[in-house]
Image 1 (tube, rainbow, N blue to C red):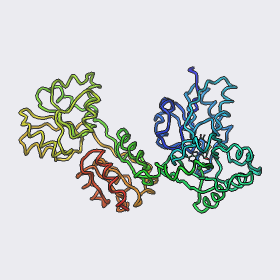
Image 2: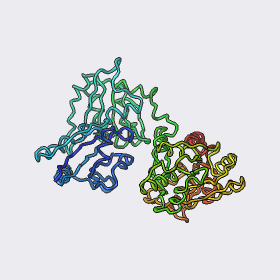
Image 3: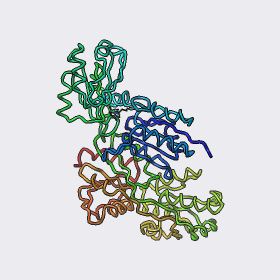
Image 4: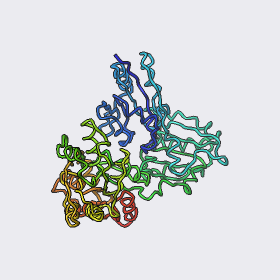
Length: 500
Ligand code: SAH
């Protein structure tokens, strides 16, 4: 039997982009993933579909698995010969009980590895514009647990901490915030020393409460500060006033739903997150090549009879490549045919196979694509490879221009959305939903149910056809000036202060 292994992986403080490359690789090749509640959903999505997922920290039901239970799960799965990833918030070895989890494994001779993570203790202040050390103010950093064991007083050496004059970071300290500040003041800390709490740091919900060590407990109470939060005490806190870059990102506090198919959601989500948005990936459609597709096979076998291959989406390109691959061929089967694509996204998909588009219209829609082809006056017919339910815009434009064509349907769109209840809670004025095709609108509406009131939803649409579909269902709409991701994001940035 193959030997199992446990890899402790630090998932970072909240922003999924702060996972390390090594951590990502470990997750992507895991057979079992055991995770905590503070791990971001975007990181959990990296878990391979056929891997077993074990949530040991369900918050809502307080159904957490006790520590020795977790240790046993890790051991059992490793003894079954599995590659186990234990995914923990921040860094596993900083107040993460990572050490305890390794003990039982070591005793049983199971091999293990630890991949450090970016700790909240340093990254959360950083996202609030606070460097934890500064040559002028603080030459040491102390990371302290504020966790109080039931019925026991806090076990913190306040005298030593005040004497050291460094920056103090308390984790797990929200419920003992008053005792912590009191302890520091009694040990002689200057009462105007800046202090702050930072909640849900590095996520779109990050919130900083800046005060002094004497006023922080009251401020925090007023603002209902909740865990997870760090407490930071020291002169460096003042930098937050000037350097809080994250709080000023343009989409901070906005929730944006991305409805694109899973495999294409990546870049849009990444860019929206980098602008401060809370991104919820809610793939409403998936595209699947029609296999086998005899019509496409037959047309490609006679490729010399056509002047252009025409693609209206990246999915058409993937369907063609999949067919070639499955039938034992590759791009060489396409010979020297010219290629027309609807826009840069489709062109990028072609580039993956070493191909280039000879034609891309100025306006990225089917009508302009058809008109552009007509301008070339091709003598031989063009071969269109597109979706089962494509509209007539392209073929109408070709007919107008007297271009002969063969229209082959080679992939279909399926509605995939699940977790509808979760999404329904997001259907408020504050949420934006991005639609990158009319079919994503249809998929979204199908998931919400025809009877759902969608009039509050701000649908940000990539083009006219998409907008028309959204209007049919009474969504509010804003439409990108061009059918590109850049223009879609631009539309969100321009509109975000106006909508609501
Ligand atoms: N190993 C983790 C810490 C685990 S202890 C790390 O290295 O970050 C859990 C505590 O970490 C929480 O109570 C809170 O104080 C802090 N914490 C974790 N994530 C946080 C976040 N996103 N924002 C603020 N504090 C966080």
